[in-house]
Image 1: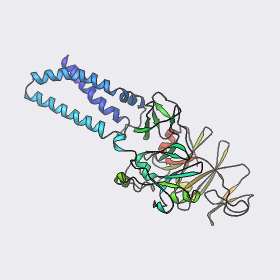
Image 2: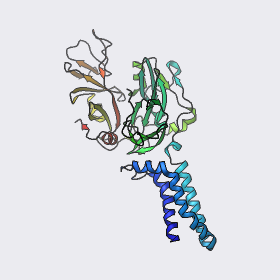
Image 3: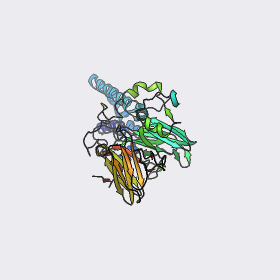
Image 4: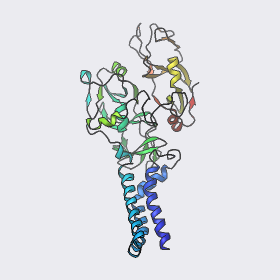
Length: 391
């Protein structure tokens, strides 16, 4: 009986440490199953499970160490060292919040003081007359940045494995909460709030396990585009600057904007509708649809209908900034490839691909924007089941 209890306890002890991390990190096969409930149980109860396993292992282990010969003592010592090594790596090296840290120095610059390359992709937020830009290759490492824009607290998030940028209100049960990165679910970053210890999905802002399961954080409108294009819209913008403590970590994301980064989890598929192909995702009034990035680059403008909503998708001349607009039924739009502008039937003047009227009596007016996101096809189809595909 003693050997059986010893080996069962030993198996339990190793399984606890490995599985609580395996289920929430991108190990082979770990992100394709719905195991988040089990992962949360292990995380919440790991201390008691360790005590139970040690209660099975230690009495027998001490007995065998005292009564056994040299080979047995060496074997038990080796087992203890293996467990100690495994404990260290799975608790201090492989956990998400031990690999990716929030910024220690959060500084912003505007105007000539901002030396950020204008071609860098950013997540932009504009609230109550204030605009801020967060370069993706910075927040892509940190995964989240807490900030205040226009007097409103915001949680700017990014998951490089899903290519999803989202901005949420960090209010949980009416109070501002802090969040830590705990891992990922179906390749998407997952955060834990400090108040309820619920786990929140980055792509949707939904609590997928814990006390607040099924509730959602309020999403705040944001845009992904070139910093230069964002500055044209918001000249008084302030841009998040690199934290000098993490410059080497930022370097690991070089090439992420273009999709030619070395990492297999972040590199794009050049073809269409592949696992890592880029798409533009739009969700309106309970319906969602994905648009092939390659097709948008070829056609420059796409006119479509999503439910009762008419949509116009455009892309900037450098194939980096994209825009999605809502069009009333009275407007008919055509793309003028020669001038790289939009012609709106019944309206004098021409319109830029960013939705601004460039000349004529309506100069300066803009088409109504729609919240949209660029992400990997595997992410959009996973978190928007039943999504349509534009062909």
